[in-house]
Length: 159
Image (cartoon, one colour):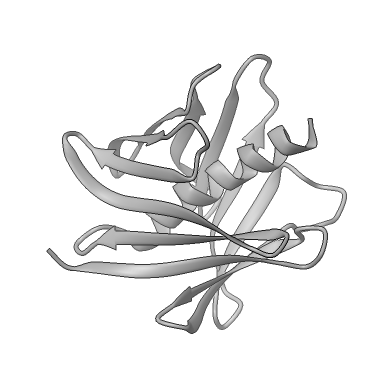
């Protein structure tokens, strides 16, 4: 089985976004459109072209994030309350992401098939995430799911 491996690193002291690398080559950036808009992230390719937008909806009791491509919702991610489970439903099918107690190891499934593994490593005060995506899957879409998890983690960390 072949996997493509990505590394996600936070950029900026106050987590203004992320850089995503494949084999040490910069491939994507993730930005907040404004320091005042914390509910939105934009994934851009290395040339600065927008690929997808993640938009966290205001919801009491759970987290809900839409993934948009060309201003059209292609998937909705819902995090179960009091759990490390995420449900993803959209144009690419139904997915589920599960994490361990500390959310340092996560797995994305499409049905019974494992399509991606996420691993968190500490580097000084920040964290680096390794993402292995099984070949034949939409890499930007699966990276969007991982970034939705990071959005939720950021909000939970802020309290």
